[in-house]
Length: 87
Image (cartoon, rainbow, N blue to C red):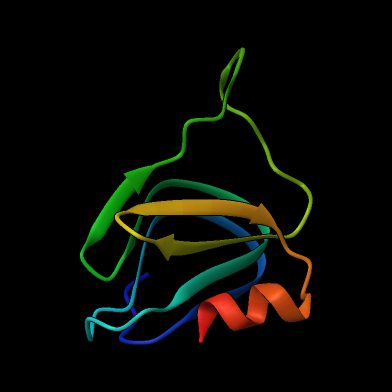
């Protein structure tokens, strides 16, 4: 998936995702966050969570966003503080 803006997946995200192709600060949210690679703006990262048979399946909703020069993954909990960091 490639998007100029944010990416919101109402299901399980697998493979590669690129949000913020316009260069802005955007985010990726999914009900199941299992991507191989994530790119937000000019920052590219890989998921580090591995299970015994490969990638560890994430069943809780999660969000990924750019913080400085890294991509941060958090449980999807729309608090006012999180929404302020994405603005």
